[in-house]
Length: 207
Image (cartoon, rainbow, N blue to C red):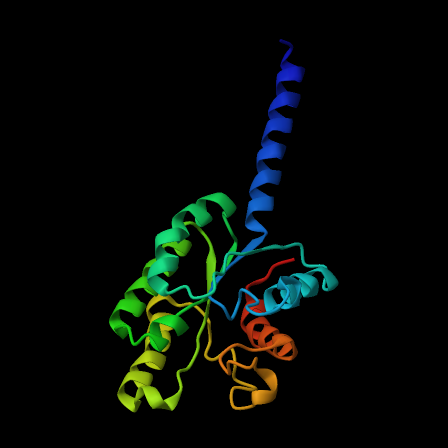
């Protein structure tokens, strides 16, 4: 085979590899629970779908994979995370978990360990992580709720990842923005949830 043809084929091969790597780097994987899975509404109304729309409007070339499952705990997400990471090879992982651990009264140390493992796996694979926190109702007791909230802060310090402290910050006490169960945000709340996440996510995005 002539040398010029070999050089051309090598160039094409390397270009395709570069393109594939670039495509893989441009995905955002959202790993969450019912707050991110658009529970009780059409999936396209949830904040994750709104995120995808915003990325397009701002001409940021990212695809969004919503791997959120209603009712999921940090332990459940940890168990299913590796195949998701291998399949999608995200540039960014948005980690919105812990609420169901808290509502079930599971040990905070267990939640922190699971989230830490997911963060480490993400970083080892080359993905940046945005940690999205939640807060529990006061009836869970000051000791438990304080430890629960502190776990998120400790994770951000340990792994040097940004934190959205509370995805429901702007409306948590307003029933107007919740479904009848008073636990799950309704459609009207989704844009506010997106704004909370966007503030932490935007610095991680590249054009």
